[in-house]
Length: 259
View: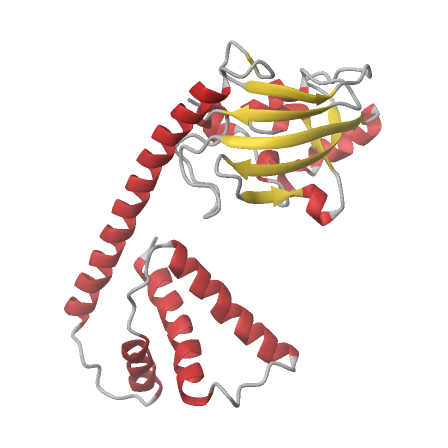
């Protein structure tokens, strides 16, 4: 988290908070610009909350904005501001390290317990899967592009992505997804529904692809294999795979594959 990004986020959130303090009852959210302004503040606020910055002083933020807009002398020296931002960055890094360690410990315990269930099969790689609905359709190859519906959760049940909620399945190349999906898809028949329990080293490892997915997280996917695309469609889908932003599982598998 770079200092200038942090400063910008704080300023934007502070501007929203200051406005709410002074005229909460008169703020209108009617025009596209007003709605977008609210959205910027809301998103920045959520981002800061996820960074653990729940002790920011909104009045101090508003004072900084007022001084800058009014071209007044700043009340703190640059050196003091740099030191303050450094402390916030250090705190954020310590928080992320703690979350990463907790996720690794919790994930290991979850997989150990989950693997004891008779419905769950554990492969040599450590991938765990459970067949929810059997089918006898064809099995995809690594070179295929498939059509799937899915819902991704953390082990605590929190959903971080769902094509089901969006009401639209996605096409993706079998070899262009995280390793747990690459293996899991090749264990499925078209028409089947399975639940994949993916160890962090077969997902994103020490990477945190989004604030919704902490580093070292075990991922749980409800996955339905709807079909295998024909070669022509497969080539088109593979070419556009890097542009697919909807599904974390559809991200390139490089971070986990290097481990």
